[in-house]
Image: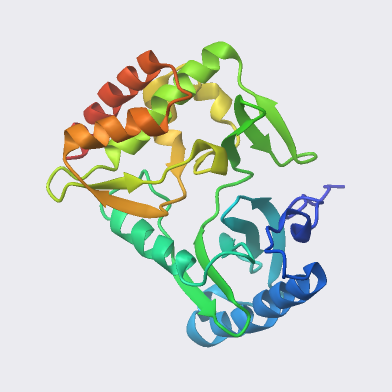
Length: 264
């Protein structure tokens, strides 16, 4: 008998809520439930029936300081839902959605959002993206670089030192690859500690090949865009990735430029 695989992880989403002092946990849980299960579901039904079904299931799978992440299963296909944390200023999620749309034009390095929905009534915003099976978010835990693995139980796994070098190189390359040399627009406020970069399950087979790993890594966050010269953008990368080995950043910049040239 085939065991049905769990849709999400066993933890409850509200454990990972980030709240202002005046916000009440129970009230915020109710808001989220009503927003997702009723408000957002009705929005899909009326506007995007191809994403909706009567047997739709939504399950918590991950979290970050800006968003809480869910997987939506409509019985035919899965999608990822990214909802703003309860304490996030309303409009921030829409701004990120717009930024992702801009960066994803002719660019496979960004996970391009499919749709956005917000409700001032519930103070909630959400956008939908393609689903990456049991994706691993890259992050730091106690200054250790690693990934959060959702199965069988949600846990953190630190990278081995040799693997960390490749990860640092590829993250740098991803950021460089997002810079548009015609418009001078690039990614700003990128943060490794917030799970901005993901790898799909099975990436281990590529971790010794930075070029191949580059193709498998995706960027899922775009809090802010910046307009600056390429030299200033490179300086920004060194500043923001201060925890990285500078040699790995150097190699990442070279790899990123090689990918941009191939794309253009």
